[in-house]
Amino acid sequence: MTDFDPKELRKVLGTFATGVTVITTRAPDGTPVGLTANSFNSVSINPPMVLWSLAKSARSRDAFEAASHWAVHILAADQEELANRFATRGTDKFAGLATTPGAGEAPLLPGCVARLQCRTSFKYEGGDHIIFVGEVLAVDHTENAPLVFQAGAYAVATRKVYGPLTSPEAGSEATESFGDDFLDYLLPRAHYQIYARIRAYHEQLGLADADYFVLVSLIATDGRSRAEIDTMFSPTGHHVTEQTIDGLAARDLVQRESGGARLFLTVPGRRMGLMVLAAAKNIESEVLSKFSFWEAVSLKTLLKRLVHVTDAGALPPMWRPAEPGGS
Image (cartoon, rainbow, N blue to C red; front, side, top):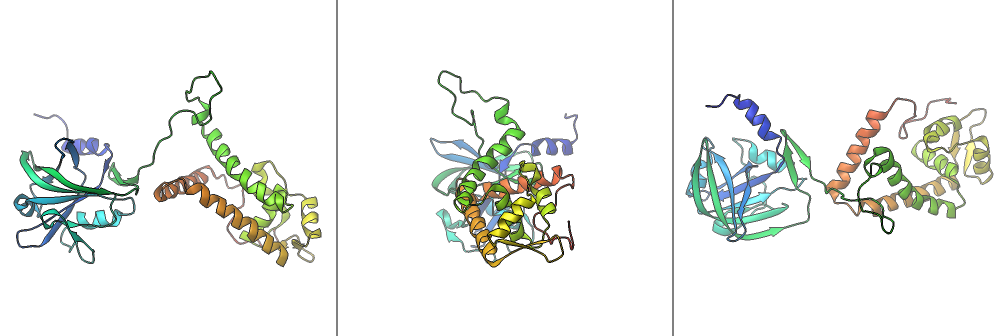
């Protein structure tokens, strides 16, 4: 006799992060059948066996109980729509999908992290579910990031970094310090390492840090004031002064609005600004190539959230129209 609410048990079990799978088979009449499941698990490597469970109330129960073969598809991070499709009742789940026949004619879906083609070995009663145990006949996989499900929502898995972020000195122990896990260390360290490569490029063009800031901010939105640009980049410790603008104007890279405080790029200035911005984007692409596509998406998403939650409203947004007559 249990003394807890079944809803509480469901909530507790939901804290366990799992992958997301689609299980497919073919009904006796040849109709393709499939459903989304996160109950998949490994049983044995030798012999190769896996299991998953199906609710006794599922419409596909008869098809799977009659099937000699079925296929497990471990979904990729970009297959959330596919997971939702196979989790929805009363729809043609295979409409428009380019499937191929697998073992026992079980339909195979494309684009997954991995696929396991299985032959039914055993079926067990498991409370309100039926547990299917299958022998793995064939497998294939990709390097795509997997789709993850936890606490009722989809997520993306990323690899953790263990140990120190820098090479320890000779004789020291390779243990992670407080600083290695401190956000105020991690963010500027990553920024400095990336920006050092960008700086090396714009210095070749005779541009100091403040010059670079002016050009890229005017590429984003022409017509900003010197004061606005200075405020925008003040957290870097650099300042955009009147001498900065005088130097850029002397090189015919920027010009002041007649009778106003706003700054505009000249044709040569826009050309140079686009050059350094293109170089910066190329460096970004090289850095992000070390991550999977979905790791890069997750990284940018989390950084955007961090910018949002730490924004006190003191800094002008980078990508918006300049204020008319701003000073």
